[in-house]
Length: 258
Ligand code: ZN
Image (cartoon, rainbow, N blue to C red; front, side, top):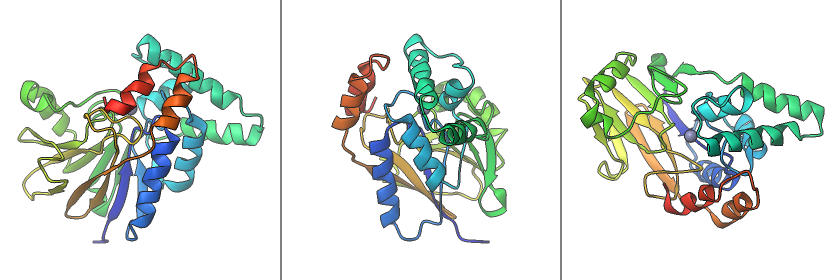
């Protein structure tokens, strides 16, 4: 089996400061062999075009998230604030004067895949939301306690391991069912022979687990390590507040990680 050491990012949401900080951290980690992104490159944040450029340049591939879909196709199940942000985001892509650049970015977004198998023997499934409904379904920590049928049905779609984003809450779900917070795991989870698991990598650009630092993971053959990186929130918040179509709450929540 080929050794794996892959950085997995998700939910960047147009936050270029967070994305650049994460990329710099990855570059300091010599042994990373690849970078993949689980979607929601854009939506909510003030620098969508820059984030698409950096992801397309640095990541081996990315998935389609509900916000990527919402911007290039249709905002499905979006609240009014999120829909307004999606239309503003679309306008940023359309405002590009260089026709080739404009087409290249939109093509990149429109061709993002929804499900990808990767890793040794294709043993990992990557989706943005859930293995059952790849773009839009959320898996929440409480589901392990309150929605065991949902978790069971989701695990029926997982051969062995899956990686997801979407909820912006990092951690590990097992088919027990159980949920493990990265803190209680002391940042590392080792795969068990007799257990399936779904790893949520957290969010680079809009964490919602009470920790404002950017979140991503390093995946290896024997397990997964959760990473957190502080970045400069002030410039992002200022840019959000300067755009009328982006609600101020989108700036405030970055400081609180929620
Ligand atoms: Zn998201």
